[in-house]
Image 1 (cartoon, rainbow over the protein chains, first blue to last red):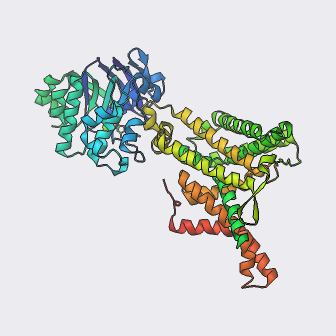
Image 2: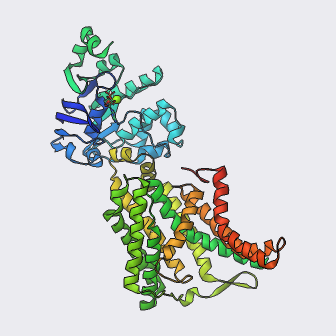
Length: 233
Length: 302
Ligand SMILES: Nc1ncnc2c1ncn2[C@@H]1O[C@H](COP(=O)(O)OP(=O)(O)O)[C@@H](O)[C@H]1O
Ligand SMILES: [Mg+2]
């Protein structure tokens, strides 16, 4: 479904990604691991078109994403839950959910406001509040709901539990598990290694802009030496 | 007292005209972060086209429709050809480029319509007077301008706050790349907003044509007032533009009408007149300074 082939990218004069190879099949949950500053967010930004690649290619269901604009990529069915959530502060909860709503995967049972509210009852309680009146956890739920409302074929989550209270984190992990059960394809970045590896099918491990290891999540879960070496845990 | 009410209406009418101009400017400035000095040119284009079509056809409605269409089309062309490339540039570049556009539009109108100002006749159905205040006949047309301004304000409010397009405009104003990453074609959205702003400026031009002389450069004097309005109101805020426009319209009109009389209590007639004249032309800037002293980002910061 998604194929990154030797993707190079960077900011200004410095190159941050030095040839990333990554693949994700339909229905898979793949996680991108690595310490801070290794290039995970940069990789995601290349996929969604927020950052131009310098060379290499990104293919999604046979279409070259690196050649088209960000909005066209989303319309191909790539839904982003960005780092730092980036909720629209001047839109209400409902508006944040509706502003870009669409059915880009031609789903027979598309996401609706009601379904999102069932997934995150907190959002329903606060549906008239503006984005900037929400707690961090609520903003995160909203960011996930907002991405689901475009009915993505591939959902990308970048640090979706960053800085949240454990209870809220659990709620979000539960939702991600539900999504996986519904065979939603997911590319996910997170710090919470144990939970992450219990959900993901496969992992890619990044160091300094390169993929240094990859494999089955279960294998990494039992390989403490590897975890210690690259992730410092 | 009657005179006061009449001037109050005049001030409101002028304010609503300023609002038509400011609404587009504040949207473009607030949403796209673009300073467009050429906004007054769309006002001029609206006035010229309306006056010309009116003269040729005698139909005010036709003149209005054609003028709105041409103003919006000019806006769209300018956005696609020139301004689209300026969004990421700094404000100085934008000021220079759009100043160039002013020169272009002024010269173009001179080439097409010549140096003589045009005058636009009002159709009969608009040239009567009504007695809003008993025994003081007031031109119907000026009341129509107030009505149009109110209707546009309401329409814009509904558009911005209660439609999908409005949501996207607001979302784009706060995080442009995020709304794009969710599948919204922000370029097209910007073109649309810009054309809408140009259309409203053209509308103001049509409204102004029967009142002021239609001449090359007519956009610039009013543009300055328009900038005062959006700074007072808070850049990007339609509500602010409405309130700011009414304040500026009222202060400017009432200042010119009543300052001489008021100052006569303090000074001799001749010096009162000259002081009043300069004070009146400064009044809106004093108003702006006073408001910014308390609310540095305008009445309704966004
Ligand atoms: N906007 C930016 N401008 C310049 N450098 C950046 C920018 N964003 C990230 N970087 C640099 O790129 C590298 C990778 O960052 P990032 O992809 O955010 O890492 P991660 O998401 O894995 O923590 C870091 O060295 C970071 O300093
Ligand atoms: Mg990151």
